[in-house]
Amino acid sequence: MALTATVLNGAGLRGRCCRHKVLHPLLGPILADPTSKLYSSYRRPGSPPEKTPSWQKVDFNFKKGIDALKTQLSLLKKETKDHLRGPEGRGFDQYLLQQTKVLWEFRSQEDINKWVISSDVEIGGKSEVYLKLGRNNQAALLYGTLNTEVPRDGETKYSGYCSMRAKPPVGSFARKKYYDWSNFNSLHLRVRGDGRPWMVNIYTDPYFSHHKDDLYNYFMFTRGGPYWEEIRIPFSKFFLSSRGRVQDNQHPIWLDKVSTLGFTLGDKVNGPFQLEIDFIGLINDRAHTEEFAYEIYDRNPQI
Image (cartoon, rainbow, N blue to C red; front, side):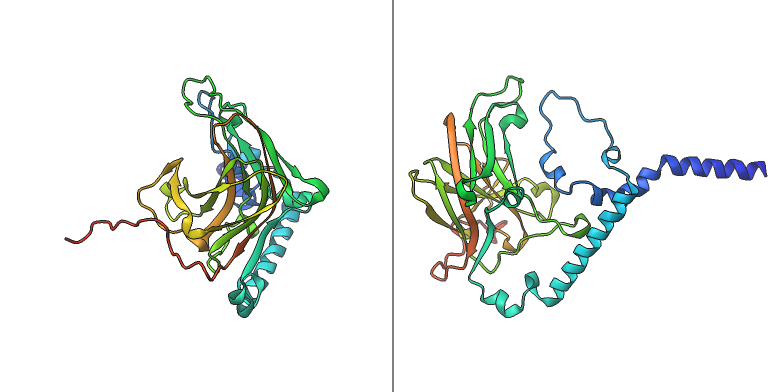
């Protein structure tokens, strides 16, 4: 009898100690912010590593867990209906014949909240960047000050960048989702800048972990002045880079696994900047027939 009580007490103690190991995989992705890990992986040189376990950051609240579960189940129900109806919840005829599509337009604070901004402050720099609604709530205004002063930490060699990036789509139960742009061949933007050059970045979900830093980039030149300009960038012009270095082995974008899109300013010119974005969309330009603008080298060619 005493042996039985000892075993049961030990099992109960072990259950209490390891409860987070069971609850975290189930409720962690639901209660935590699914996009927070994408923007917090960098650790500044010289700073101590974070010792707080990830499970301690999750709010284990039973009522919140039930409410979150109901929300996720309703999202799953909607996704299932859309999947049965057709691609993106539409019929195949509408999906295949679509020539244009607006991805993001900025008319409310909710549209602004779909984006995140960052700068070299993350590595100890002094650049500033802000994002808000423009005049009459008709555009997004990205503005700030670029500062190329290198932080004095003994490790960082370059500084001076500001960026804006859309939050990646997330499905029910924090599942990864992707944009499928395979029906289109060009990116269409309506912007108004101050004459500075920007880098347009497209992120795709990699098949292998060592490709997680891969980006597809192309330049966007703003002319300045009071007039809006419409810019079309074919997807065939985007080139592959990794950690800021253009790769020798180039290949076209995987348009069926696009994760998100962003803009980066890093022209090494100190001072204020400003970029207004009315909308970001896609277009299928039938006059553009180029598949890829860069040379593709054969690996291990046969002699």
